[in-house]
Length: 251
Image (cartoon, rainbow, N blue to C red; front, top):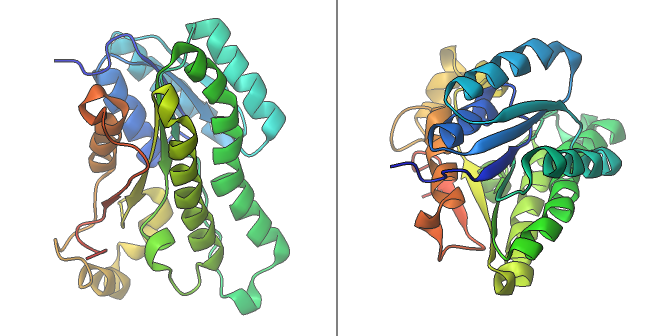
C-alpha cells in the first residue's frame, strides 16, 4: 500500500544524505517530489536523484534554491505550485554544521549555521502555509537533532539552531492545528552521512557508540521511515511533537 499516492512533497537539501533518503522513501510511497540543492557541486547528484525518483513512477524535479534566502524560498514555492499544483508535505531538511568552541567561533560561523538551519525553516514554512491553509490540510516536518535537545561541547551554534527548530515547531502546531495542518520535528541521533563521517572511525566511533544503547549509528532510511510516518495519515493525530530517532541516546 502506498501511503502518499499523488501527494506533493517538498524536501529541502535533498541531493545527498538524509534528504536523499527521505525523497526516495516518499516517492516509493507515491508522492511527487520537488527538492532543492544549493551548490553547483551538487548539480550532478541532484540530476541523478531526479531521474531515480522519476523511475519510481512519480513526477520529480530538482531546483537549485537556497532555503536560507527568503526571496529564493518564495520563488521556489511559487514555482512548485505552478509545476505541481499543490503542496501537501514540506520537509525542512537543509542543514549545515560549523563546529567550534565558543571561544574560537566567529560571528560569521554562527550566522551561517543559524541562517541555513533555522532561518530556512521559517522561510519555507512561511511560504507553504498559504496553499496548505487554502487546502485545509498539510504536514510540515522539521529536521531538528538530538544535539538540540542534549547540547554538545563545540556545537553551540548547531545546538541552538536545532533547539530553535523545536520551539518553532511547537508554536506552528498551535497556530495551524485548527486548519488541519500538522507540524512535527524529528531529532536524529548519530546517522551515517557525509556530515558525520569523522565520527565513524577509530576512537571517536568507539566513544560515541558506547553512549548509544542500541550500539550502532543510524541509517538515513530510518530517518526517512519516520518522515514517511509523519507525512502520511498514519500520524493524523500527531502534531507539535519531537520524535527522537537516536538509538536510545536521549534516554
